[in-house]
Every structure is written in structure tokens, then in C-alpha cells.
Length: 159
Image 1: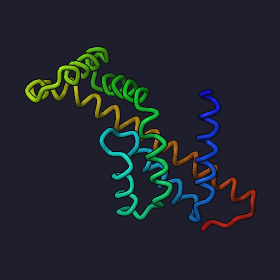
Image 2: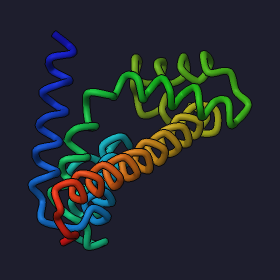
Image 3: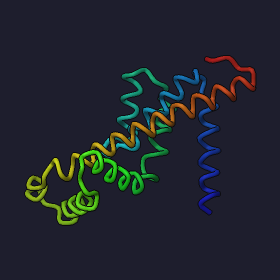
Image 4: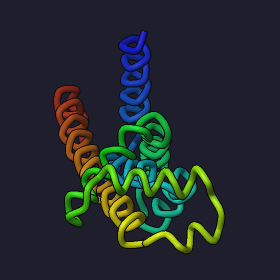
């Protein structure tokens, strides 16, 4: 069942990307920025579209990148971000996770401000930033080379 859904998602994305009348670079860059905005918490599709307008990127590819990564990778990315940020800052990831979970499980503004920014929030933010950057760069490279190859096979010129 999961493989069927993944296969349909891959087919949908491929169809949408191949239908965009733009250069492989602009499509891939838009998708990469969308992936970045989709993975980073608090950003999402609206931010991706604002970035697309500001940076003059392909808006369809940017929105697609943000939509595809926005929710379905959240749990995995969250845990990976905590681990990565903790390693970089020399902290134990379990302590960071427990601090993060404690703040949100028993949320209050006073508890939020009492929490150590450096020990709880900074590792998570740093981890998310690095994971988002890595995934967006990977999405750019994969999309660029894939679109270039497909268009070269079909004899299409870049838009």
C-alpha cells in the first residue's frame, strides 16, 4: 500500500515537473527552494511562494516542493534534526528531545521562557536548517539532471 502511494506521488510530481515550460535550472531551483521551505518548521507553501516571487523562481515548482515535503516527512525530519543539531552542539540528543517534549507537553509561556534556548531550541533549529539545506540541494541536483536528461532524450531545447 505504501509503495503504491509512493509510486503515485512520484508519477504525479514527474508529470507536473515535465509539464512546466521553463528551463531545468529554474524548475529545479524552484523545487529546491520549495523543499527547503516545506521542511523548515513555520515556513511552508506561503513562504515558498513569497520566496519564488522575490527570487523570480518558478512558482509551480516551488509550491510543489513545499507541498510534497511539508507534512509527510515531519516526524523523521524532526528526529534527524534533533540528533544532528545535538551532535554539532556537543549535546546528548535524548536530553534535547526530552527538554523539547517537556516544553510542549506542559506548555506555558513561563515554562517556554525558562527553558534554555541554547540547550533546547538552538540544536533543533540548527538541525532543521542543515537537514532542509541538504534536502533542498539534493532536490535541486536530482531534478536538474533528471529534467536535462529527459529533455535531451526527447530533443527539447531549454525554455
